[in-house]
Length: 149
Length: 149
Image 1 (cartoon, chains in turn purple, cyan):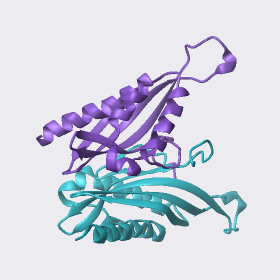
Image 2 (cartoon, chains in turn red, purple; image 1 turned 90 degrees about the vertical axis):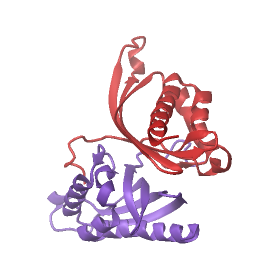
Image 3 (cartoon, chains in turn blue, red; image 1 turned 45 degrees about the horizontal axis):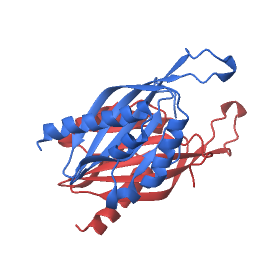
Image 4 (cartoon, chains in turn blue, purple; image 1 turned 180 degrees about the vertical axis):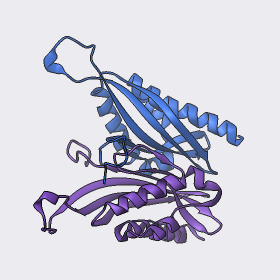
């Protein structure tokens, strides 16, 4: 594969990841992530969460998150991919739309909430193709940059 | 270098990064990060911040953060390093102690605040050695649920 073909494939695989989350499709989610000898080193940081390690634990967390997500949609911007020999790193901004959780409102499902996140997704080159190996997502709490720290 | 030597060097370089931050030493901070043809792709996500791109912008943010940090100390736990041909990925838990910002209290500097973060630090292998290239830090907001099992 050329670097450009790798890059295209990685952008596509990254989109597969978000599509699996949006669809609540755990099988599709599992297919995106690395398995085999790298299963134990699979790592995921959900926004605001502590680090999770190991494919089994990470997949359990996705099952739980999906079960608790009514609606979520991602629009990705500022996508940057860098391809190495055996690793690739993709960083992007996640513009997120979710169903607002307002249960005492009863019945009206038309409320949505917007949020912004940043993700660093690290992929590994495998005999079967690229696979997601480390994901770190975080919430953008302040977008003004000088009022933190 | 053997994988073990790489691993040791990366753990050390990662410690240099935190030591530079703790000391408020911008020169030491600059020495840790990649430069040259990769300067434009240097990427940093400070906890809760949007993504910053480019070595100059990232270094400006460090100068600002250091100028606004009275005291900070990191104890790293759960450090995992994976070494590739040209990339290396280190993930760790940051146990953070800072001076609590309580200015209307006037005079009493003895207050500290604890916090917990997670970091994914990606390094690149360069002719001059390993250098930090992408850093993603995030706050651990909830340590409850079923994440630590």
